[in-house]
Length: 261
Image 1 (spheres, rainbow, N blue to C red):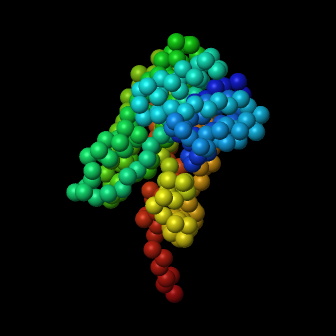
Image 2: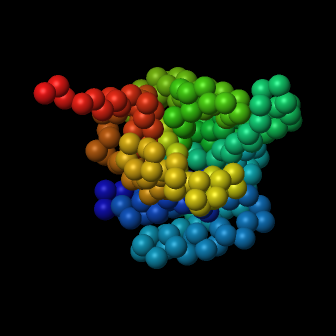
């Protein structure tokens, strides 16, 4: 129960990586403010799931991609719990297309979700942490694609690369306030979003090709987020932590060779 008595906001937390992070923080004792878009049909179920761990949970329907939505989430957290100790900023989605065909409006939408939403949420949460004067933890969910030029992921990779740099700059400015700011780079994670683009057979086949022999799961990212949100990570700030089962190094394995007799 390393997070007992702490309050955490986890955006985009009704399913996938966001819910995985919320669950792992709740297992460590944190009260959780969950978030999903207005009209969500699954946010209430996510709240009940978090409450089953014996912690308090509060769901907020708001568009975290916008300043107004981020303000609503932050205000709701303060009204319900009167403090924000932890922010895990998860929102982000990908629209795949080639560079030559990429729709400009889609580019703006992806950048808004991947990068701009992180700015809004982190600034508002950090202001509350600074005003309280007891430090805090900010964890951004980035991606290994921030460092890999993956075809047909133009806006997503661009946004995640920007997110990594933004994280470092925020970390530097938060030194004096003892607010740890870090990012997690998931590899290929089995989420509802991935299942829009790939079927079960494809995901299982691709997972077997990875060094760890499987796709990543939301709880893999959640466990890393719980660590970075805990006092165990007090001396860690301004870093990106790959949680990818060796994804970035998958092409570095030696080619088997027969031993000379």
